[in-house]
Length: 486
Image 1 (tube, one colour):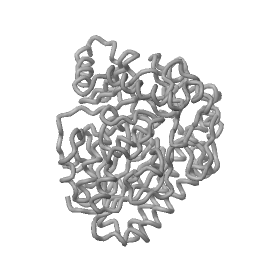
Image 2 (cartoon, helix red, strand yellow):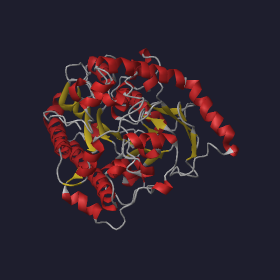
Image 3 (cartoon, helix red, strand yellow):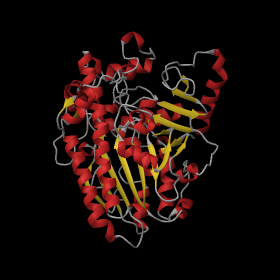
Image 4 (tube, helix red, strand yellow):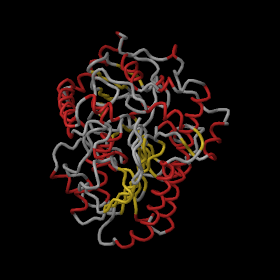
């Protein structure tokens, strides 16, 4: 590919099902939709893990969790393993990050030329309660989160405005200084992550809309009885606080409003790129670290392998990228890694690294169809055992080390309403999914490795009672804001 600058835009917890270009007819995301219209949209992309810290580590390193560690929200990336940021900076590229990183600390060398208003984990430790994987306590932040759903400004909306502002300044004042080699600008927003507080013009547009959707399978009688959902729901007991139809409606309206708010901030950054004349020499990536269940099946937040949480939007636009194109091949965040190197003419750097599972997005957009299996993993809060997702053909296989497996046909059942794992007609498909997973990893062995690491971190932080007494985070805070434990 012709060497060009690269703008990487990442959001936080943006479900692929709440974007206009992905088929949502209610939510307003005109700027992201326009980006998809002038580029390539990947319709079946997955994060490496449906929770913030592991997903962001996988994105930085281009590998899956079983390859790199950084398992959960108490095990943040610390710069100890070279990332694409490290490697490009070392080869003379300016690589600047603005906004949320969710790594361990600014005191670590995270590989960037500069980190502007970065958000890292609290106290360099993150969510220590997620280390408790047996007899898990109920998380207390659910009440606070439910109570914050509604109109107004939050520390997150203010932070996203600051991120958009800093990105515009960088494009206008700093980008012109870097002409020797292509630069990479990583702009990372926090919307639409909880809290579901959004300025009133966004909130009321959806709250008062007659077609605002109700979460699917939300009524207790409709919820799938799978033991993983039951276990997770006891730990993240949002139902105690979303105890009226109006509170649920406020939550959905808040999330939808944040999607539109996010889109407007992205629009400002893309406008600055255009106004400065940089669009013709800059490719753009848009994605999110993971999605959000938004009440589907009675679950709020991420941490499941359903499409709402594990699937992510992925759009690429710019020179040599097909316009108005859709790729249905299963893809992953690990595919972004080689594409970044290709964009800035450093693909030869990849030849020195072993174990990279990704295929460049450029190759996928051009029609390459690699023989491989796309997976995702979960090893964290609210689950007493490891969870793995396998995508192949039209099927999704979900493997639990502590619960029965699940199987879905996403061609016939895109909403994942019918679990086929117990249907004898799908025995061979179920076995294929399991075989594909075991060809990549041994789930029980990975689960043992994870729990050994978590026991080690738990001991270093005073043990079970100490981390429970520390409290529930709910969400990390922007720089300069005191953490709020519950």
